[in-house]
Every structure is written in structure tokens, then in C-alpha cells.
Length: 210
Image (spheres, rainbow, N blue to C red):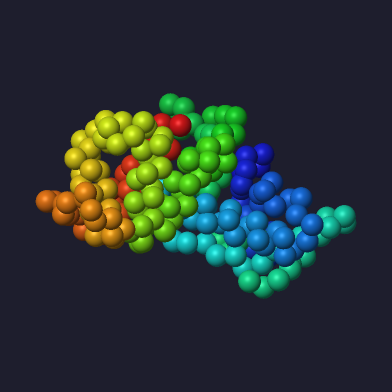
């Protein structure tokens, strides 16, 4: 919901994603290039908060001086109706009446703002988006270590998942980054599916603490 950014609204072209990140683009091509990075971040946020399906860029919508929107280049994002993209504060009293409250950003909007303000959190979203790649999983672990003071700090941050995080890093480093030498074969290698689930938990925890 406006004024929070980004937000989704219904237009003549269907549900449309709006963002300040592309408002000052010189043309539709530049807007499309900016939108690609934005949509990747949104997809990562949406997966890690709701495990929703990916959105794709369908076209860029330009609003000209007269106020009528026009579409450019077949290739704003194609979005299924998702009311939780925009946050509106509402409460119900004891009489089952809606109490209007000040609009508030959704969790997804808060995550995107946190990533905008922090290069490390932005990198975490990027690596998390490519979580099917072991190298990207390892890079995400590195980002988490930067955020929380190295491996020891990350293990403490991970709490009950601390040992599993160490096993995950060792697995990715030995088998999938081919870092031999001083690195010994892990005694408790982590399967990819388990690695992805654990990384999702850590990303959620990192953003929920911002």
C-alpha cells in the first residue's frame, strides 16, 4: 500500500507493482533493467516469508502527463493477487467492529527497506534467491558471518541450529567449493534440501531481528 514502497495496486492492466526505484528511469528499457533487480529481491523476500511462487516481469507501465497508463515492452511485474504484499493495520474490538488504525508497512516491505539500507542484507537476499546453488549457499553463510561477528558469532546467533550451521559450511566448502588442503571431509555432511531449509531459517531470523 502507498505510501510504503514497493506496493501493488489494481490498474486497467491488472495487478501492478509500483516502486520509487524505477520512477525516475529515463525510458522503459532502463526501467525494465532496474525492475529486474527489484523483482529478484521481491521474489527472495516473498519466498522466505511466505514460500510463494515467483513473480515475473510482464511489461513496464508508464503514466504520462494526462494520467493514463500505457504499457511498454512485452517481457511492471506479473503478479497474482496477494493481499499480504501491502500492509494495512486493522484491529477488531469486543463488538466485532473494525477499528481503523494507521497504515503500516507489511513484513515484506520492511524486509525490502532493510535490504535497501544494508548492503549485507541485500547480498543475503541475492544469495538466498539462488539457494539451489551450493556456492550461493556458502556465500550466504559468509554474509551471515559478516553480520554476526564471524563463525563463532553466527553459531551463537543460530542457537539450536549452531552445530548444523557449522556442518553446512563445512559441507559446502569441502564438496562444492573444492576447497581441499587443510579442510577435512565433514563427518556430518548436509543434504542440499536440509541446507536450503536451514538457510531459510537463518535468513528469516536475520531479517526479523532488524
